[in-house]
Image (cartoon, rainbow, N blue to C red; front, side):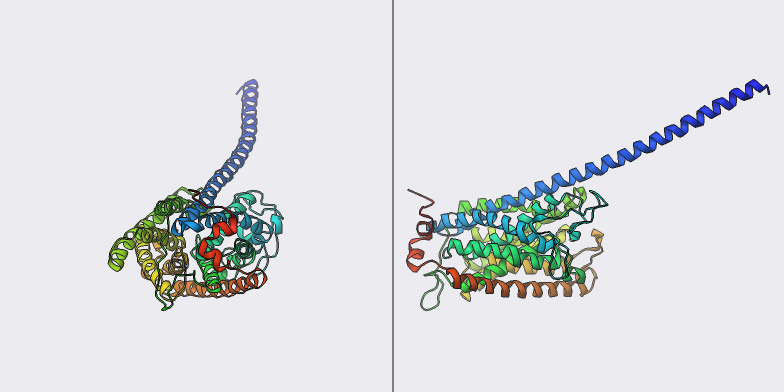
Length: 460
């Protein structure tokens, strides 16, 4: 072959490989840039979803305000609305100052000891793998620290709001605010650390996806302690010990509140994925809705059988009972499992409400029956109905998983119950000794809207 032709071919090959190498380098940089962009897009998408879910949970406080005020008497409506407003504000400060650190800060198996006032860097590898933060228990989600904080804050405030209904119509506003601060700063986050903060119950294998125990049972236990310290409302029980009904004044508000809470639960449960996982979000929304629906149906049937008429207020609580019960197992059960769980919860609440009245536990809105009793049931239901088809590695007793998980769930329920109830009882009594917790008999009979706040809900 002619030397010039060989040289020409060699030159072409050299240029070709040079271009190929250069292009490969460019392509590699482009691929790195694309990967970085996709990672940032995922963080942004996850963050938007978590914040929207948090906003839905925040709006649940409007539902609680409507439900509780409607189930109580008109003369106390302002006091109940004010407590629901104030508890969100107090909880926000308490969780920022100390609660978030106790719950999610790195520490030991009992309590976190880092991150007070939301100090310390985030440690999510999806944001920066080189960060060494102080909130390791939340490292599994890639959203920014502020998003993690806000989402967990609205859960903490929910636990305190549950207490509001338990102690309605006879508690001093200032005393309730002080207890709410202590609950969100100390009681709620310590047990929360055990379960969601990498503590000892989590290490044991106890599961609670969205808070049947962490949020609802804790609110119920704290509320039960408050009821015991306060005692029943004047006139609730006769001198012979018989029940004297005190019906709520506004069932439209009760129903509106129930619907708002049902809507908010689509942030509460699916939002606990803390990531825009399309399949998980949709599946959890379906299980959540089905449990609420069957809770309404069975409570309607049960109330008709027990009381002779289908009771609207009982059925609103039936929906909430189903929602509370499905909160722990919502990510681990099939739609059929959710239907069964909600149906049982709707029946349970119809049994629990008259039972607590019978033993003179005066709970004006049925919060103990809904949040404590059905929270316990829902936590146990995870150990019964967790399905292998979900592919989470968790299998309940009814699917051949044995009693191991169910036993762990029982241990967690007992541990959290004892801790929350005893400590809450102590804190309530401390507040009682310092400020008193109950309004005067005269003010209670007249209605605490005027004595506590100088106004009425219905001026005409």
